Length: 96
Image 1 (cartoon, rainbow, N blue to C red):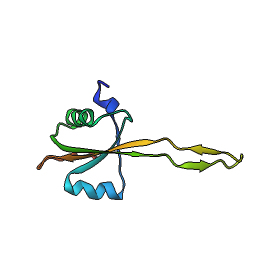
Image 2: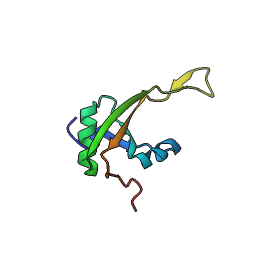
Image 3: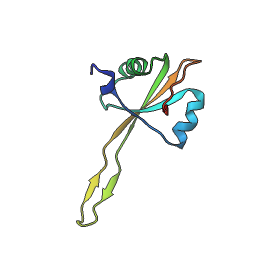
Image 4: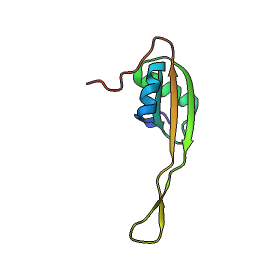
């Protein structure tokens, strides 16, 4: 993976991740094959900040019932990255 846009897919926004932003921890949905050094360099390149720590989390997709047929489908698996920034750094995710 060469391009930072291929590594970091989108920011994850929820009540929990929004509360973590006060502690300079930002959550991103990342490519399933991305490694921690790749995520670190991608966030630093995209947002021009200094990253202190990266934690990753693989979430399995839920099994969902099909309404018409007696079968089940599955939502996709998602990999998240919790990125802690260096002191004094911040990312403005909701800029106008």
